[in-house]
Image (cartoon, rainbow, N blue to C red; front, side, top):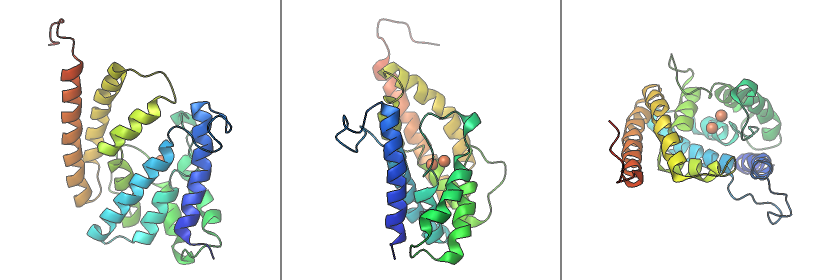
Length: 223
Ligand SMILES: [Fe+2]
Ligand SMILES: [Fe+2]
């Protein structure tokens, strides 16, 4: 019987690596067989798994359910797809069943994994999510988008879509801060809310510093 973490990571790696190579425009041969310059989906999912391991014991959530959902929540998602075509939560929830088949993951918890995956989307919540495992997956997924690692991830993946310049990174980062405020306000659990506030302050300081460094000293300061 395959260990479930191994099955989840392999399924995620298979889809995300092929998708990253497509997004970067490299053939498998040109990329040395199987590597894209940066596999955003894999790195992002690893961050969500680490956060699940941190948050679950603090709020009493089932770690097996949330970690499994963290590995698989974006396992079928493709880079660069517009929101109008985005059914990745439903697709990943459907795929989870087959990925976990034949592994040592408890059968009685598969539906809880699928439910958490189905509910992880959106950058704002009007109501606290239920059950707790769905709420914790949402918090971990969103925390991963507003920390120091997210700066690395967003910057590295940006080159897959267009030529990038520091000024673009700064403008996009400053626009992201408004969305990050909404994410921080929507956290379901108290430890995630506190951590989100900490990360938001870090992000603000980071972009303030970048703006200072990137301002043209010969131009008047914007009012
Ligand atoms: Fe997602
Ligand atoms: Fe995600």
